[in-house]
Image (cartoon, rainbow, N blue to C red):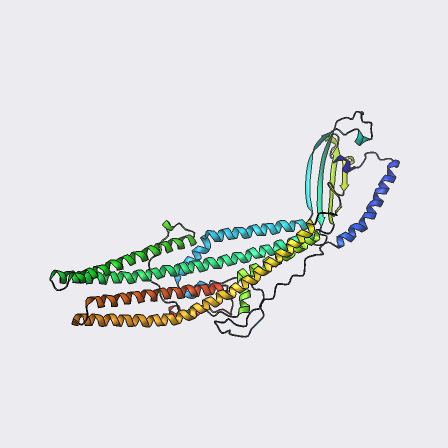
Length: 515
Protein backbone atom coordinates (compact mmCIF):
# COMPACT_ATOMS: atom_id res chain seq x y z
CA UNK A 1 0.00 0.00 0.00
CA UNK A 2 2.86 2.35 0.79
CA UNK A 3 4.39 1.97 -2.63
CA UNK A 4 1.21 3.12 -4.32
CA UNK A 5 1.06 6.41 -2.44
CA UNK A 6 2.91 9.34 -3.96
CA UNK A 7 4.10 11.29 -0.92
CA UNK A 8 4.99 14.94 -1.20
CA UNK A 9 8.51 15.43 0.22
CA UNK A 10 9.01 18.03 2.91
CA UNK A 11 12.06 19.56 1.23
CA UNK A 12 12.01 18.91 -2.53
CA UNK A 13 15.19 19.68 -4.41
CA UNK A 14 15.89 20.45 -8.04
CA UNK A 15 16.74 16.84 -8.83
CA UNK A 16 13.12 15.84 -8.39
CA UNK A 17 11.75 18.35 -10.89
CA UNK A 18 12.24 16.16 -13.97
CA UNK A 19 10.41 13.32 -12.19
CA UNK A 20 7.42 15.55 -11.47
CA UNK A 21 7.46 16.83 -15.04
CA UNK A 22 7.46 13.26 -16.35
CA UNK A 23 4.50 12.42 -14.17
CA UNK A 24 2.59 15.43 -15.45
CA UNK A 25 3.39 14.45 -19.04
CA UNK A 26 2.14 10.94 -18.41
CA UNK A 27 -1.06 12.32 -16.93
CA UNK A 28 -1.54 14.58 -19.95
CA UNK A 29 -1.15 11.60 -22.27
CA UNK A 30 -3.64 9.64 -20.17
CA UNK A 31 -6.39 12.29 -20.29
CA UNK A 32 -7.25 11.84 -24.03
CA UNK A 33 -7.66 8.10 -23.47
CA UNK A 34 -9.91 8.69 -20.48
CA UNK A 35 -11.91 11.27 -22.43
CA UNK A 36 -12.53 8.78 -25.25
CA UNK A 37 -13.56 6.08 -22.82
CA UNK A 38 -15.86 8.39 -20.89
CA UNK A 39 -17.67 9.35 -24.08
CA UNK A 40 -18.67 5.70 -24.31
CA UNK A 41 -20.23 5.84 -20.87
CA UNK A 42 -23.94 5.15 -20.98
CA UNK A 43 -23.88 3.59 -24.46
CA UNK A 44 -26.19 0.63 -23.84
CA UNK A 45 -25.65 -2.67 -25.62
CA UNK A 46 -29.13 -3.93 -24.75
CA UNK A 47 -31.35 -4.65 -27.78
CA UNK A 48 -34.06 -2.15 -28.59
CA UNK A 49 -36.97 -3.33 -26.47
CA UNK A 50 -40.07 -4.25 -28.43
CA UNK A 51 -42.75 -6.31 -26.63
CA UNK A 52 -44.23 -9.14 -28.73
CA UNK A 53 -47.25 -8.21 -30.79
CA UNK A 54 -50.36 -9.80 -29.31
CA UNK A 55 -52.97 -11.03 -31.75
CA UNK A 56 -55.98 -9.74 -29.82
CA UNK A 57 -59.40 -10.44 -31.34
CA UNK A 58 -61.66 -7.52 -32.08
CA UNK A 59 -64.26 -8.82 -29.61
CA UNK A 60 -64.76 -11.65 -27.16
CA UNK A 61 -66.57 -14.67 -28.51
CA UNK A 62 -69.08 -14.60 -25.65
CA UNK A 63 -69.80 -10.89 -25.77
CA UNK A 64 -70.38 -8.19 -28.31
CA UNK A 65 -67.85 -5.37 -28.09
CA UNK A 66 -69.24 -1.91 -27.51
CA UNK A 67 -67.66 1.24 -28.87
CA UNK A 68 -64.85 1.57 -31.40
CA UNK A 69 -61.82 -0.71 -31.26
CA UNK A 70 -58.68 1.04 -30.08
CA UNK A 71 -55.03 0.14 -29.76
CA UNK A 72 -54.03 -0.98 -26.29
CA UNK A 73 -51.87 1.44 -24.34
CA UNK A 74 -50.13 0.62 -21.03
CA UNK A 75 -52.40 1.64 -18.18
CA UNK A 76 -51.23 -0.63 -15.39
CA UNK A 77 -50.36 2.33 -13.18
CA UNK A 78 -53.95 3.61 -13.06
CA UNK A 79 -55.23 2.86 -9.52
CA UNK A 80 -57.98 0.26 -9.30
CA UNK A 81 -61.29 1.23 -7.77
CA UNK A 82 -63.41 -0.44 -5.14
CA UNK A 83 -65.25 -2.65 -7.61
CA UNK A 84 -67.00 -4.69 -4.92
CA UNK A 85 -69.17 -1.70 -4.03
CA UNK A 86 -71.11 -2.40 -7.21
CA UNK A 87 -72.81 -5.23 -5.28
CA UNK A 88 -74.29 -2.63 -2.89
CA UNK A 89 -73.62 -4.82 0.17
CA UNK A 90 -72.32 -2.91 3.24
CA UNK A 91 -71.13 -6.14 4.89
CA UNK A 92 -69.00 -7.01 1.87
CA UNK A 93 -67.62 -3.45 1.84
CA UNK A 94 -66.55 -3.82 5.47
CA UNK A 95 -64.92 -7.22 4.86
CA UNK A 96 -62.92 -5.89 1.91
CA UNK A 97 -61.67 -2.97 3.98
CA UNK A 98 -60.59 -5.26 6.80
CA UNK A 99 -58.82 -7.63 4.42
CA UNK A 100 -56.91 -4.76 2.82
CA UNK A 101 -55.63 -3.69 6.24
CA UNK A 102 -54.81 -7.05 7.83
CA UNK A 103 -54.36 -9.78 5.21
CA UNK A 104 -50.98 -11.40 5.80
CA UNK A 105 -50.42 -12.34 2.14
CA UNK A 106 -50.84 -8.67 1.23
CA UNK A 107 -48.32 -7.69 3.88
CA UNK A 108 -45.86 -10.23 2.50
CA UNK A 109 -46.46 -8.89 -1.02
CA UNK A 110 -45.82 -5.35 0.18
CA UNK A 111 -42.57 -6.53 1.78
CA UNK A 112 -41.49 -8.16 -1.50
CA UNK A 113 -42.20 -4.90 -3.28
CA UNK A 114 -40.12 -2.99 -0.72
CA UNK A 115 -37.26 -5.42 -1.29
CA UNK A 116 -37.42 -4.85 -5.04
CA UNK A 117 -37.33 -1.10 -4.55
CA UNK A 118 -34.31 -1.42 -2.27
CA UNK A 119 -32.52 -3.56 -4.86
CA UNK A 120 -33.28 -0.94 -7.50
CA UNK A 121 -31.81 1.75 -5.26
CA UNK A 122 -28.75 -0.42 -4.69
CA UNK A 123 -28.27 -0.92 -8.44
CA UNK A 124 -28.66 2.80 -9.09
CA UNK A 125 -25.97 3.60 -6.53
CA UNK A 126 -23.41 2.15 -8.97
CA UNK A 127 -23.95 5.21 -11.18
CA UNK A 128 -22.31 7.43 -8.55
CA UNK A 129 -18.83 7.55 -7.01
CA UNK A 130 -18.26 5.67 -3.79
CA UNK A 131 -16.54 7.91 -1.20
CA UNK A 132 -15.05 6.81 2.09
CA UNK A 133 -12.68 7.95 4.79
CA UNK A 134 -10.34 6.04 7.05
CA UNK A 135 -7.47 6.38 9.48
CA UNK A 136 -5.02 4.04 11.18
CA UNK A 137 -1.40 2.94 11.58
CA UNK A 138 0.56 0.44 9.52
CA UNK A 139 3.56 -1.29 11.06
CA UNK A 140 5.77 -2.95 8.49
CA UNK A 141 9.21 -4.24 7.72
CA UNK A 142 10.07 -4.09 4.00
CA UNK A 143 12.15 -6.83 2.42
CA UNK A 144 15.73 -5.99 1.36
CA UNK A 145 14.81 -6.70 -2.26
CA UNK A 146 12.06 -4.07 -2.21
CA UNK A 147 14.67 -1.51 -1.10
CA UNK A 148 17.26 -2.54 -3.70
CA UNK A 149 19.54 -4.02 -1.04
CA UNK A 150 21.41 -7.28 -0.76
CA UNK A 151 19.50 -10.29 0.38
CA UNK A 152 21.28 -10.35 3.74
CA UNK A 153 20.85 -6.63 4.34
CA UNK A 154 19.10 -5.49 7.47
CA UNK A 155 15.91 -3.41 7.17
CA UNK A 156 14.21 -1.68 10.02
CA UNK A 157 10.62 -1.87 11.19
CA UNK A 158 8.69 1.34 10.76
CA UNK A 159 5.25 2.64 11.67
CA UNK A 160 3.29 4.72 9.18
CA UNK A 161 0.26 6.70 10.28
CA UNK A 162 -2.32 7.36 7.57
CA UNK A 163 -5.55 9.39 7.39
CA UNK A 164 -7.17 9.65 3.96
CA UNK A 165 -10.30 9.85 1.92
CA UNK A 166 -10.87 7.40 -0.96
CA UNK A 167 -12.93 7.69 -4.12
CA UNK A 168 -13.92 4.81 -6.39
CA UNK A 169 -15.97 5.07 -9.55
CA UNK A 170 -16.65 2.71 -12.43
CA UNK A 171 -17.35 4.57 -15.66
CA UNK A 172 -20.49 3.23 -17.29
CA UNK A 173 -18.73 2.03 -20.43
CA UNK A 174 -21.03 0.39 -22.95
CA UNK A 175 -23.97 0.71 -20.57
CA UNK A 176 -23.02 -2.15 -18.25
CA UNK A 177 -24.12 -0.27 -15.15
CA UNK A 178 -27.12 1.46 -16.71
CA UNK A 179 -28.38 -1.85 -18.13
CA UNK A 180 -28.30 -3.26 -14.61
CA UNK A 181 -30.21 -0.23 -13.38
CA UNK A 182 -32.79 -0.67 -16.15
CA UNK A 183 -33.20 -4.34 -15.26
CA UNK A 184 -33.66 -3.48 -11.58
CA UNK A 185 -36.20 -0.77 -12.44
CA UNK A 186 -38.20 -3.14 -14.66
CA UNK A 187 -38.09 -5.79 -11.93
CA UNK A 188 -39.44 -3.27 -9.42
CA UNK A 189 -42.27 -2.39 -11.80
CA UNK A 190 -42.94 -6.10 -12.21
CA UNK A 191 -43.19 -6.46 -8.43
CA UNK A 192 -45.58 -3.53 -8.29
CA UNK A 193 -47.81 -5.16 -10.90
CA UNK A 194 -47.64 -8.49 -9.07
CA UNK A 195 -48.63 -6.72 -5.86
CA UNK A 196 -51.66 -5.21 -7.62
CA UNK A 197 -52.49 -8.65 -8.99
CA UNK A 198 -52.29 -10.04 -5.45
CA UNK A 199 -54.57 -7.26 -4.20
CA UNK A 200 -57.13 -8.09 -6.87
CA UNK A 201 -56.90 -11.81 -6.05
CA UNK A 202 -57.42 -11.19 -2.32
CA UNK A 203 -60.37 -8.90 -3.02
CA UNK A 204 -61.95 -11.54 -5.26
CA UNK A 205 -61.28 -14.31 -2.73
CA UNK A 206 -62.97 -12.30 0.03
CA UNK A 207 -66.03 -11.68 -2.15
CA UNK A 208 -66.27 -15.33 -3.17
CA UNK A 209 -65.86 -16.56 0.39
CA UNK A 210 -68.55 -14.10 1.49
CA UNK A 211 -71.01 -15.30 -1.17
CA UNK A 212 -70.27 -18.93 -0.24
CA UNK A 213 -71.16 -18.14 3.37
CA UNK A 214 -74.39 -16.52 2.25
CA UNK A 215 -75.12 -19.60 0.13
CA UNK A 216 -74.81 -21.85 3.18
CA UNK A 217 -77.00 -19.42 5.15
CA UNK A 218 -79.70 -19.75 2.50
CA UNK A 219 -79.41 -23.54 2.53
CA UNK A 220 -79.47 -23.58 6.33
CA UNK A 221 -82.66 -21.49 6.38
CA UNK A 222 -84.24 -23.79 3.82
CA UNK A 223 -83.39 -26.93 5.80
CA UNK A 224 -84.48 -25.35 9.07
CA UNK A 225 -87.91 -24.77 7.56
CA UNK A 226 -87.96 -28.30 6.17
CA UNK A 227 -87.04 -29.82 9.54
CA UNK A 228 -89.79 -27.83 11.26
CA UNK A 229 -92.43 -29.02 8.78
CA UNK A 230 -91.28 -32.63 8.99
CA UNK A 231 -91.30 -32.53 12.80
CA UNK A 232 -94.91 -31.40 12.68
CA UNK A 233 -95.72 -34.09 10.15
CA UNK A 234 -94.04 -36.79 12.23
CA UNK A 235 -95.99 -35.76 15.34
CA UNK A 236 -99.22 -35.97 13.35
CA UNK A 237 -98.35 -39.42 12.04
CA UNK A 238 -97.43 -40.57 15.53
CA UNK A 239 -100.91 -39.61 16.81
CA UNK A 240 -102.60 -41.30 13.87
CA UNK A 241 -100.52 -44.42 14.38
CA UNK A 242 -101.39 -44.47 18.08
CA UNK A 243 -105.08 -44.21 17.08
CA UNK A 244 -104.68 -47.03 14.57
CA UNK A 245 -105.44 -44.93 11.50
CA UNK A 246 -102.14 -45.61 9.66
CA UNK A 247 -99.58 -48.37 9.49
CA UNK A 248 -96.16 -48.32 11.08
CA UNK A 249 -94.62 -48.10 7.59
CA UNK A 250 -95.96 -44.59 7.09
CA UNK A 251 -94.71 -43.52 10.52
CA UNK A 252 -91.25 -45.00 9.87
CA UNK A 253 -91.08 -43.27 6.50
CA UNK A 254 -91.94 -39.92 8.10
CA UNK A 255 -89.26 -40.42 10.74
CA UNK A 256 -86.72 -41.29 8.03
CA UNK A 257 -87.41 -38.09 6.13
CA UNK A 258 -87.09 -36.05 9.33
CA UNK A 259 -83.73 -37.63 10.22
CA UNK A 260 -82.50 -37.12 6.65
CA UNK A 261 -83.38 -33.42 6.74
CA UNK A 262 -81.61 -33.01 10.10
CA UNK A 263 -78.51 -34.75 8.74
CA UNK A 264 -78.38 -32.55 5.66
CA UNK A 265 -78.85 -29.45 7.84
CA UNK A 266 -75.86 -30.49 9.95
CA UNK A 267 -73.83 -31.03 6.77
CA UNK A 268 -74.61 -27.50 5.67
CA UNK A 269 -73.62 -26.18 9.11
CA UNK A 270 -70.31 -28.01 8.86
CA UNK A 271 -69.58 -26.52 5.45
CA UNK A 272 -70.49 -23.06 6.67
CA UNK A 273 -68.11 -23.35 9.62
CA UNK A 274 -65.23 -24.22 7.30
CA UNK A 275 -66.11 -21.36 4.94
CA UNK A 276 -66.26 -18.91 7.86
CA UNK A 277 -62.81 -20.04 9.01
CA UNK A 278 -61.42 -19.47 5.50
CA UNK A 279 -62.87 -15.98 5.42
CA UNK A 280 -61.32 -15.22 8.81
CA UNK A 281 -57.86 -16.10 7.47
CA UNK A 282 -58.39 -13.77 4.49
CA UNK A 283 -59.17 -11.00 6.98
CA UNK A 284 -55.98 -11.71 8.92
CA UNK A 285 -57.83 -13.05 11.96
CA UNK A 286 -57.83 -16.30 13.89
CA UNK A 287 -61.04 -18.27 13.23
CA UNK A 288 -61.84 -18.25 16.96
CA UNK A 289 -62.09 -14.45 16.96
CA UNK A 290 -64.29 -14.09 13.88
CA UNK A 291 -67.98 -14.70 13.36
CA UNK A 292 -70.40 -13.52 10.70
CA UNK A 293 -74.10 -13.39 11.45
CA UNK A 294 -76.26 -15.61 9.19
CA UNK A 295 -77.87 -13.84 6.27
CA UNK A 296 -79.30 -15.80 3.31
CA UNK A 297 -77.98 -14.97 -0.15
CA UNK A 298 -80.05 -12.73 -2.38
CA UNK A 299 -79.94 -13.18 -6.13
CA UNK A 300 -77.18 -11.06 -7.69
CA UNK A 301 -78.37 -9.16 -10.73
CA UNK A 302 -75.19 -7.22 -11.45
CA UNK A 303 -74.22 -7.08 -15.14
CA UNK A 304 -70.55 -6.73 -16.00
CA UNK A 305 -69.60 -5.67 -19.55
CA UNK A 306 -66.39 -7.37 -20.63
CA UNK A 307 -65.18 -4.52 -22.83
CA UNK A 308 -62.64 -5.05 -25.61
CA UNK A 309 -59.88 -7.67 -25.69
CA UNK A 310 -57.38 -4.90 -26.39
CA UNK A 311 -58.45 -3.14 -23.18
CA UNK A 312 -57.73 -6.35 -21.26
CA UNK A 313 -54.02 -5.82 -21.95
CA UNK A 314 -54.27 -2.49 -20.12
CA UNK A 315 -56.29 -3.66 -17.13
CA UNK A 316 -54.78 -6.98 -16.08
CA UNK A 317 -51.93 -6.45 -13.58
CA UNK A 318 -50.53 -9.93 -14.21
CA UNK A 319 -50.12 -9.04 -17.91
CA UNK A 320 -48.30 -5.87 -16.89
CA UNK A 321 -46.05 -7.96 -14.62
CA UNK A 322 -45.22 -10.37 -17.45
CA UNK A 323 -44.39 -7.48 -19.77
CA UNK A 324 -42.08 -5.87 -17.19
CA UNK A 325 -40.33 -9.22 -16.71
CA UNK A 326 -39.59 -9.16 -20.44
CA UNK A 327 -38.17 -5.64 -20.15
CA UNK A 328 -35.89 -6.72 -17.30
CA UNK A 329 -34.65 -9.73 -19.27
CA UNK A 330 -33.98 -7.49 -22.27
CA UNK A 331 -31.87 -5.12 -20.13
CA UNK A 332 -29.85 -8.05 -18.79
CA UNK A 333 -28.84 -8.89 -22.35
CA UNK A 334 -27.08 -5.52 -22.43
CA UNK A 335 -25.28 -6.34 -19.19
CA UNK A 336 -24.12 -9.68 -20.58
CA UNK A 337 -22.91 -8.10 -23.84
CA UNK A 338 -20.96 -5.42 -21.98
CA UNK A 339 -18.76 -8.14 -20.46
CA UNK A 340 -16.97 -8.38 -23.84
CA UNK A 341 -15.74 -4.78 -23.54
CA UNK A 342 -13.26 -3.04 -21.22
CA UNK A 343 -14.19 -1.91 -17.73
CA UNK A 344 -12.82 1.42 -16.53
CA UNK A 345 -12.41 1.75 -12.76
CA UNK A 346 -11.28 5.16 -11.48
CA UNK A 347 -9.96 5.28 -7.94
CA UNK A 348 -7.93 7.66 -5.86
CA UNK A 349 -6.94 8.59 -2.35
CA UNK A 350 -6.07 11.92 -0.77
CA UNK A 351 -4.88 12.40 2.79
CA UNK A 352 -1.93 12.48 5.13
CA UNK A 353 0.68 10.01 6.22
CA UNK A 354 3.64 10.30 8.54
CA UNK A 355 5.95 8.26 10.66
CA UNK A 356 4.86 10.10 13.80
CA UNK A 357 1.27 10.57 14.91
CA UNK A 358 1.94 14.19 15.86
CA UNK A 359 3.05 15.01 12.28
CA UNK A 360 0.07 13.33 10.63
CA UNK A 361 -1.99 16.40 9.74
CA UNK A 362 0.88 18.70 8.75
CA UNK A 363 0.70 20.10 5.24
CA UNK A 364 4.07 18.55 4.44
CA UNK A 365 2.63 15.11 5.30
CA UNK A 366 0.00 15.21 2.57
CA UNK A 367 -0.20 12.26 0.17
CA UNK A 368 -2.07 11.70 -3.07
CA UNK A 369 -2.61 8.70 -5.30
CA UNK A 370 -4.68 8.64 -8.48
CA UNK A 371 -5.29 5.38 -10.17
CA UNK A 372 -6.42 1.95 -9.08
CA UNK A 373 -5.51 1.13 -5.52
CA UNK A 374 -5.95 -2.53 -6.38
CA UNK A 375 -5.91 -4.03 -9.87
CA UNK A 376 -5.72 -2.02 -13.09
CA UNK A 377 -7.36 1.03 -14.59
CA UNK A 378 -8.72 -0.85 -17.61
CA UNK A 379 -9.59 -4.53 -17.45
CA UNK A 380 -10.68 -6.90 -20.21
CA UNK A 381 -10.56 -10.68 -20.04
CA UNK A 382 -8.82 -12.06 -23.14
CA UNK A 383 -9.78 -15.73 -22.81
CA UNK A 384 -12.48 -17.13 -20.55
CA UNK A 385 -13.35 -20.44 -22.16
CA UNK A 386 -16.64 -19.10 -23.53
CA UNK A 387 -18.00 -17.91 -20.19
CA UNK A 388 -19.02 -14.47 -21.50
CA UNK A 389 -20.69 -15.92 -24.59
CA UNK A 390 -22.53 -18.36 -22.36
CA UNK A 391 -23.76 -15.40 -20.32
CA UNK A 392 -25.10 -13.72 -23.46
CA UNK A 393 -26.77 -16.93 -24.61
CA UNK A 394 -28.35 -17.38 -21.20
CA UNK A 395 -29.67 -13.79 -21.25
CA UNK A 396 -31.22 -14.29 -24.69
CA UNK A 397 -32.81 -17.56 -23.58
CA UNK A 398 -34.19 -15.88 -20.44
CA UNK A 399 -35.76 -13.18 -22.61
CA UNK A 400 -37.31 -15.83 -24.88
CA UNK A 401 -38.76 -17.53 -21.81
CA UNK A 402 -40.28 -14.30 -20.50
CA UNK A 403 -41.68 -13.51 -23.95
CA UNK A 404 -43.39 -16.91 -24.05
CA UNK A 405 -44.68 -16.39 -20.50
CA UNK A 406 -46.12 -13.04 -21.56
CA UNK A 407 -47.93 -14.56 -24.54
CA UNK A 408 -49.25 -17.38 -22.37
CA UNK A 409 -50.46 -14.93 -19.72
CA UNK A 410 -52.37 -12.99 -22.36
CA UNK A 411 -53.96 -16.14 -23.78
CA UNK A 412 -54.90 -17.28 -20.29
CA UNK A 413 -56.49 -13.89 -19.61
CA UNK A 414 -58.59 -14.14 -22.78
CA UNK A 415 -59.69 -17.65 -21.76
CA UNK A 416 -60.69 -16.57 -18.25
CA UNK A 417 -62.85 -13.77 -19.61
CA UNK A 418 -64.49 -16.08 -22.16
CA UNK A 419 -65.08 -18.76 -19.51
CA UNK A 420 -66.82 -16.43 -17.11
CA UNK A 421 -68.85 -14.76 -19.83
CA UNK A 422 -70.05 -18.22 -20.86
CA UNK A 423 -70.77 -19.11 -17.23
CA UNK A 424 -72.89 -16.00 -16.72
CA UNK A 425 -74.74 -16.36 -20.02
CA UNK A 426 -75.62 -20.00 -19.41
CA UNK A 427 -76.22 -19.54 -15.69
CA UNK A 428 -78.85 -16.95 -16.51
CA UNK A 429 -80.73 -19.43 -18.70
CA UNK A 430 -80.16 -22.26 -16.22
CA UNK A 431 -81.45 -20.16 -13.32
CA UNK A 432 -84.61 -19.36 -15.25
CA UNK A 433 -85.15 -23.02 -16.02
CA UNK A 434 -84.50 -23.95 -12.40
CA UNK A 435 -87.02 -21.37 -11.20
CA UNK A 436 -89.60 -23.05 -13.45
CA UNK A 437 -88.61 -26.43 -11.98
CA UNK A 438 -89.07 -25.14 -8.41
CA UNK A 439 -92.47 -23.69 -9.28
CA UNK A 440 -93.60 -26.95 -10.89
CA UNK A 441 -92.30 -29.03 -7.98
CA UNK A 442 -94.22 -26.89 -5.50
CA UNK A 443 -97.37 -27.27 -7.57
CA UNK A 444 -96.89 -31.04 -7.70
CA UNK A 445 -96.37 -31.18 -3.93
CA UNK A 446 -99.55 -29.19 -3.34
CA UNK A 447 -101.56 -31.50 -5.63
CA UNK A 448 -100.15 -34.62 -3.97
CA UNK A 449 -101.26 -33.34 -0.56
CA UNK A 450 -104.79 -32.71 -1.88
CA UNK A 451 -104.94 -36.18 -3.41
CA UNK A 452 -103.60 -37.73 -0.23
CA UNK A 453 -106.30 -36.09 1.85
CA UNK A 454 -108.88 -37.39 -0.65
CA UNK A 455 -107.39 -40.88 -0.42
CA UNK A 456 -106.33 -41.00 -4.08
CA UNK A 457 -102.62 -41.51 -3.38
CA UNK A 458 -100.50 -42.88 -0.56
CA UNK A 459 -98.31 -40.85 1.76
CA UNK A 460 -95.24 -42.02 -0.16
CA UNK A 461 -96.35 -39.86 -3.08
CA UNK A 462 -96.49 -36.84 -0.79
CA UNK A 463 -93.01 -37.58 0.55
CA UNK A 464 -91.58 -37.91 -2.96
CA UNK A 465 -93.16 -34.61 -3.99
CA UNK A 466 -91.80 -32.80 -0.92
CA UNK A 467 -88.36 -34.31 -1.48
CA UNK A 468 -88.43 -33.03 -5.08
CA UNK A 469 -89.25 -29.50 -3.91
CA UNK A 470 -86.33 -29.54 -1.47
CA UNK A 471 -83.94 -30.83 -4.11
CA UNK A 472 -84.92 -28.20 -6.69
CA UNK A 473 -84.77 -25.41 -4.11
CA UNK A 474 -81.26 -26.45 -3.15
CA UNK A 475 -80.15 -26.41 -6.79
CA UNK A 476 -81.70 -22.94 -7.20
CA UNK A 477 -79.73 -21.61 -4.21
CA UNK A 478 -76.51 -23.15 -5.53
CA UNK A 479 -77.08 -21.57 -8.95
CA UNK A 480 -77.57 -18.16 -7.35
CA UNK A 481 -74.27 -18.58 -5.51
CA UNK A 482 -72.53 -19.75 -8.69
CA UNK A 483 -73.82 -16.69 -10.49
CA UNK A 484 -72.47 -14.40 -7.77
CA UNK A 485 -69.07 -16.10 -7.82
CA UNK A 486 -68.94 -16.05 -11.62
CA UNK A 487 -69.62 -12.31 -11.54
CA UNK A 488 -66.68 -11.85 -9.16
CA UNK A 489 -64.53 -14.07 -11.38
CA UNK A 490 -65.39 -12.01 -14.45
CA UNK A 491 -64.48 -8.77 -12.67
CA UNK A 492 -61.19 -10.35 -11.65
CA UNK A 493 -60.59 -11.67 -15.18
CA UNK A 494 -60.99 -8.23 -16.75
CA UNK A 495 -58.55 -6.74 -14.23
CA UNK A 496 -60.93 -5.24 -11.69
CA UNK A 497 -62.13 -1.68 -12.08
CA UNK A 498 -60.68 1.79 -11.69
CA UNK A 499 -61.97 5.25 -10.98
CA UNK A 500 -62.54 6.76 -14.39
CA UNK A 501 -65.54 8.24 -16.24
CA UNK A 502 -65.61 5.16 -18.48
CA UNK A 503 -66.66 2.91 -15.61
CA UNK A 504 -70.12 3.13 -14.10
CA UNK A 505 -70.13 2.09 -10.46
CA UNK A 506 -73.73 3.13 -9.79
CA UNK A 507 -75.71 0.09 -8.63
CA UNK A 508 -79.43 0.22 -9.11
CA UNK A 509 -82.09 -0.94 -6.74
CA UNK A 510 -81.82 -4.41 -5.23
CA UNK A 511 -78.17 -4.64 -6.27
CA UNK A 512 -78.93 -4.25 -9.96
CA UNK A 513 -76.59 -2.12 -12.03
CA UNK A 514 -73.94 -1.93 -14.69
CA UNK A 515 -70.29 -2.14 -13.75
